[in-house]
Image 1 (spheres, helix red, strand yellow):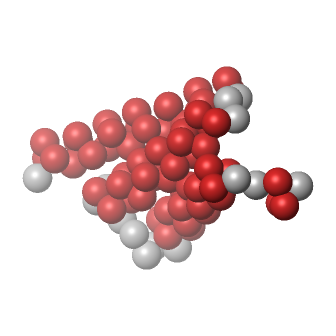
Image 2 (spheres, helix red, strand yellow):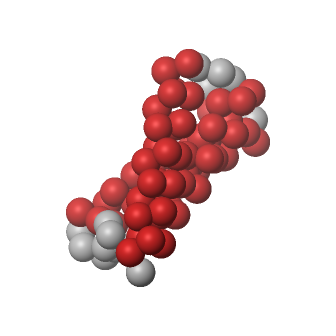
Length: 83
């Protein structure tokens, strides 16, 4: 299976690790969830996964990543308005 991975697949895998890493960083207290860093990490991970889904579409996965993009964008907008 891994031998069949394309560059797009690897970008999607990196995006998954990016989102999981952001969650780990918040739960461990390394990153503050109210700061833009957390939202930017989640946004970049979701965009990477969406990129890979362009080449291998999956409606459920696309939906959750679009929701992550929206949530991260709302978080960034809230931070920007509140600073």
